[in-house]
Amino acid sequence: MGPQHPSTHGVLRVKLKLDGERVIGSECIIGYLHRGVEKIAENRTYQQFAPYVDRMDYVAAVSSGLGYCEAIEKLLIVEAPPRARVIRTILTELQRIASHLLWLGTHALDIGALTPLFYCFREREEILKIFEKYCGARLTTHAFRIGGLQYEAYDTFEKDVERFCKDFESRIVEYEDLLTQNRIWIGRTKGVGILTAADAIAFGVTGPVLRASGVKWDIRKAAPYAAYDQYKFEIPVGTTGDTYDRYLVRMEEMRQSRLICLQAIENIPAGPIMAKVGKVLKPPPGEVYHAIEAPKGEIGYYVISDGSVMPYRVHIRPPSFINLQAFDRMVRGHLVADVVAIIGTIDIVLGEVDR
Amino acid sequence: MADEPKEPKPPQVPTGEKPASTTPAVSTPPAKPAEAGAPAVPPKAAAPPPPKPPVVLQTPLDNELVKRFRAKFGAALLEAIEDRKQAILIVERARLVEISLYLRDEEKFDMLSSLTAVDWPKREKRFDVVLDLYSFPKNERLRLKVHAADAEEVPSVVSVWSAANWQEREVFDMFGIVFSGHPDLKRILLPDEWQGYPLRKDYDILQQDTTWVRENLGIESGQ
Image (cartoon, rainbow over all chains, first blue to last red):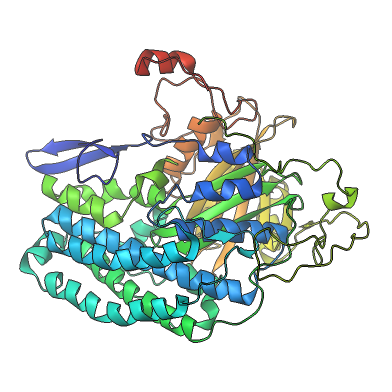
């Protein structure tokens, strides 16, 4: 299956071993989008490499960028000013909603429901418009800089975010009306691709997939970064770890993200948006591993500095890549038609799997 | 992969700069004007920073975990350091699986969040294999490192954490480090027939497997 299959979300190739219609084994063939991002990092300065991370998970570029900037800040031992942290939080949460919307639309499309795609893209468009107004780009945003932000929030930023959040409440209800009680949707997702909590932890699975298996763990709570320690939100968890649970978890996460945005725009502190960092960044020798909660799971950056202007080594721990490892466990015993549902439910982006 | 045109303002080593900028201090970085194009930042007076002693950020680590670890494994713990509040243990390669099992079962580091390698070609044992562990019950991270020379094999930890499977394959793919006991060690991101290991420091960024590119893509590779 693949690499040009329409429902593999990019260039994923899956070798399936079948017994009639049942899958008894599988192997993912990846690497078609490999660009050697980690090698490029060693040949760019710290700032020059920042736009490259947007091109890994290109539907959640803001989150990847946040992880990278914070990792380098940790390496430099600087902190972004409070105003920058709050604006970062808002944009990252909007990005989470946008990423989940894209997931929901395409996942539903794979299973055969066409309508949610149009609904989801309608709202995603609003978020991308906010990004465009903020930094001029919609997908590969490069929204943040090491040390803070380059751009001040534009004049109607709070209003735009508020309007989106107000509208979005009823929009989630629309998606749920279409799917949550839908008999076909339930039939195609309930009991499909079950991943137990023990398996999920052994495979290093993170993000909504892990939470749907019943593990209440979110880096935003476990090791708060940006401004997450200031806001109240819940971590939704599932019980069975099937595709339907993962759907419910992501729906609830969008609601929580919306609440975080609403809390954050109420009080954006005044002040500078950039910490004091030099134009030439030469972090003191040493190493950091910094992880944040991207929409798809833990995205970690392991960066080693040798004191020069270029990183000695950058390793990226992409959530899609690690989560995809559990695919084989989830797919065994299911029908070929369910393979599509399971690929969709892991929520991978091949740009990030292959780097 | 085309080489980008040189930036107008080369961010390379500023030759005319003050030598003090080689060691940015922890608390007060050199007070240069902040990032260009940030109009909201009040322009800082660029006072030349006084020369500062080099910052030592890596200090020996000796906490409870290290004590327990040392009592159990003794000489297998080569070094325990702390860098920016992160615990790093450098351990003996041959006992990696045993140590991993202990950390998973006794110290509850139940998730392997990242496994990678680093190449230090000038060192006698050029490779570091780096494991980042996470403990759900303790909400703690721990970094485990082993050293390996060029042709030395590293024991695979797939039997301890399934998450290591693809990551060890990636390390094999990019560095050529062989993991003994891995269930299916083969390239993962690059084509199976590819020659060379791109993340080694002696592999140039413009280098490619030209034979593979010519045979499989029908083009002459070149930058």
